[in-house]
Length: 347
Ligand code: PLP
Ligand code: COI
Image (cartoon, rainbow, N blue to C red; front, side):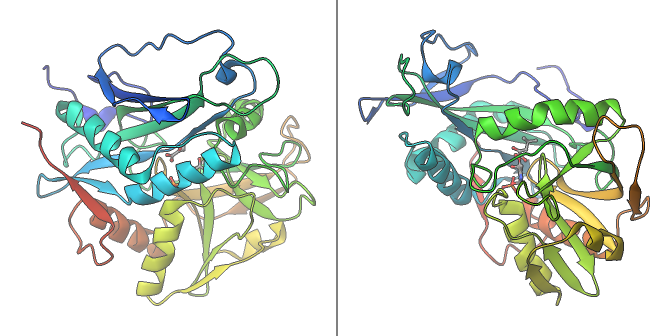
């Protein structure tokens, strides 16, 4: 295979070798299959095309400084997919099947796992969606579970820890108060697409969503969770309509390790001006510092009503948290929590 320069990559789809899939028909899962054909043939009445019975996960296979390949907390992704599928009332893979198929996907695409030096990683995208033909509004009875991958660089397309700008979304919500925001459903992202396009056109990388009931407090970014640092505290929203991020959960542990107080609570918009460091966190974004958050009456408006600035460099505490979490993922730091799972070279 020709040498690929992974260090120039951003978060995009780049072809790999193979995907792994299994179908659950009438309650029975088929044996996982590996294929180099990336096109699925689906019935046009399959639920996925109509009522969006679909959920997904995101995880990364990291090549460590020691050359070994690790997955980070895949059991957490398996549990979250089960919780999403449960919300959609459709079958889900067992934890064992989920992890086995992720490992198979990594091994089938071994030559696409970027080197440690490149800073890139092999992003895994497990997806689960309804495939049985249906017309009435019903949950999917039969589903396809597939694990695919793409070797990606940073989410921002720049250097790690490069700050990005964000805008508050006041006139578009991501998730309803009693809705599906706490699950990783494709439908949640569909809700954010139009608002993202508006924000991107205005030059913002990120969108910060508010609670849909009162539009008074911070929920999360469209791609990731929100956390801030103030007076030695790690502060992150606590809301059922925020996706329970595995990165955020892990960072809260690391923050405690560093002697920070951890607060999961309501964050009113006005509190933004008191934060020393603000970041987005998640598998794709890792920790991405936010340099500025603009507030506007609507996303369409050209007028900024208020701006919150956090500097053009990553903050010192955020940098420390980043180094520790990435250090664990890449085998530079001791994995005291047993978060990493090694994947063996198939050859
Ligand atoms: N919030 C949203 C909306 C996301 O899309 C993601 C990405 O998965 C996250 C948060 C972060 O979750 P995790 O850290 O488990 O990747
Ligand atoms: C991830 O971080 O894995 C995600 O799924 C976020 C992505 C939608 C940008």
